[in-house]
Amino acid sequence: MTFSDSPVVPACDQGLTDCDGDCVDLDSDDDNCGGCGQACASGQTCRDGSCQDAENTGLQDEDAADSGCGCRTGADAESVMGWFLLFALVFGLAWRRKSR
Image (cartoon, rainbow, N blue to C red; front, side):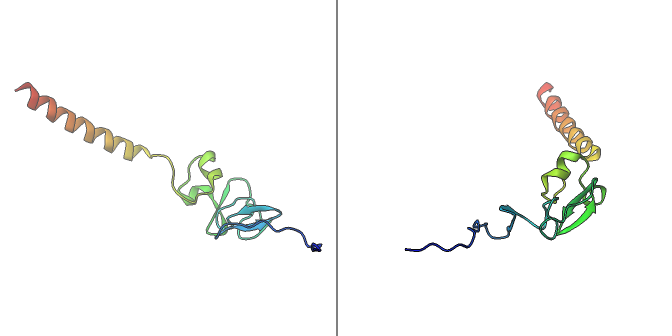
């Protein structure tokens, strides 16, 4: 039995690409955005295969930008305040009903 001299190519899952032995998602990997070795600049994140300013993607903090998920993470102040007011209203009505 003779083995080929060709290098072993890692089997990447569907949707991932082999870039220098690492399986990456070219649509969301900041170091390989749209193609192997095409890194996004500082302050940018990879979304749909192109580098975009983190501000324009809905990502607000550096940790979220580094996740490469292309999704909005964290909660904004309006959302938190809305949930707080809803909770206060429900709790207040329940307390009032119990007090009767």
